[in-house]
Image (cartoon, rainbow, N blue to C red; front, side, top):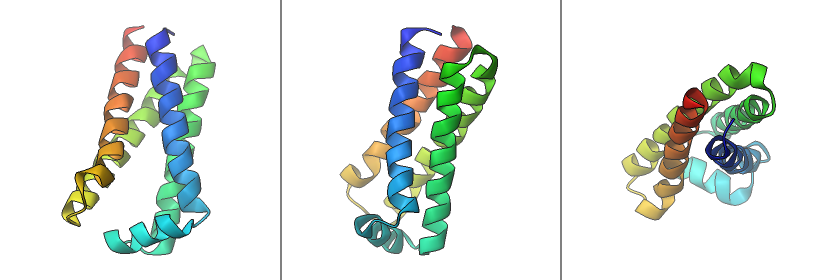
Length: 119
């Protein structure tokens, strides 16, 4: 696995892992965002669990050559999650700074998939 896959994989794992932990642990600022986006606390915690699972899948794909497929699959799921977050932030008329991190991470997931598939 090349350096681009490692760097983008770590960015994905840290970015989505931290976001997921904030949702799963119901941090007040995150729960305010959930309400503003029209999600219940339980729905947002579930999204957080998905983000954590995706981050773990990406890490497993980085750490094991036999599980690269899992890393790419997890990254694809995180990419969909990031695009979905961008959609819901845009739909709620939030500032671009609120939705930009999710879109950037979705792009990072795409680069990760390309790096692993090409490498």
